[in-house]
Length: 619
Image (cartoon, rainbow, N blue to C red):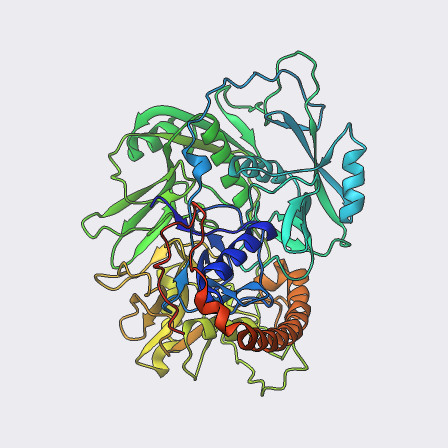
């Protein structure tokens, strides 16, 4: 059919589907699968056709279920989350615009320049403004700069570029030119949004409407919606000046070492087009005092990816490789600590027949370890001139655990955090109750922590001291996302693996990871299984501090309050709507019973012709 489950991007499209379903099914509406999916651990919703997620029609925030259904009544077509295994009718969509033969026109070479302090990307100039302003104030500042505006982000490549220049700033986030209008995010110039990049755990359709782009170690370049009155830095854009001169480069190119190196944030980079094995590429870098690139955060990743795309490098070696023993540890060739990772589908992949595995980045931006180290590829060398250390002072105390929600009527059972490793940044807690993986993750989060992430054999052996109390399995924070990427629920980099033999199994229903208390090996299982679990929490510098907000709460304080209010309001609206709808449907059923059976059950539209044999809803 060359189609996907339907993606919906406006009230107009949602209403079109609503009216079509009413005409086909009359009063037998019910639920229809649409092409929106989330992860087990967080919303992180995405359309299966990879189109932007800039519109939604939820009356209340979705539950922990992953798959989204459109529930159609006589008056409304709203969305809800359901168990993906449920049997429902479904709606397909075929984009005929993609089948048109493209007219190949050569894009004109845009001559011009950007003022000092502005960075050029294609036909626009961009600038980070450190001034703290609310959303409307920021927009006015940009508009006063030569027909400018808050920045519009239209593609992943442009997002990589902006995340790279944001790496020069210490601001935690920036306003961009996107804002929600009721159920749809649109650009502030009233044009439709063609790209979105929401951060994990962000559900932007309830609460605050203005959009900021984050600038943190793990989430630089990702978006969230927040209060428009908060004061933040922002990114301005304006057209290039038509000066007729040679365009300036996007990033500073001066590097004290060699003309072939590009300078960025205290390092110099050489994008080597020669095809070399991983070992030969590392040796070549070392001859010039460099190593294969070590990517320490999301800003640096964005810079390297942007430069790779400019040079049409399909894939290239980076400095990450693994040496296997009983477990697998991925390390940078320059021996720097792993703070960031961006693995691809079913990665990192372990080959039991290899003693080492070398990592490359593909043109999709993801990292892969499936290549043979002797394969010949381009590479990126990096010389660190003045790369700042991540942190100097190490906190040394476990926080005290107290309830954050004083209105919570449930009995609050304080966690007694254990400092089992003085050299670790974390304290740990082993549960005495069994939970499913999603519920265990929620419980850890309610106490300020997360399900444990394990980044070394040393940490695993330390955790083993907690497991003497049990001989069964315990949940850890590793899970497989909707796109089949294994990731830690707290956002930690994935650089250590300790799978049982023959694991992980390639089963989308076995997306959550258990640690066996006896063997200390891992396996993936169904997330609904009931097991004990281990939470971890960051240490604090003051022994009298209570449980701090988790990292997710720190990055999304504004979201949490908006969602809480939205849940309450949405629930009331949903209850009222349900009562009205039920009453109306009963009335219409009684009044129109005879007419319904006589009507033709067809819908004359090319997009739906011949599709009347859709699966019936068994609910």
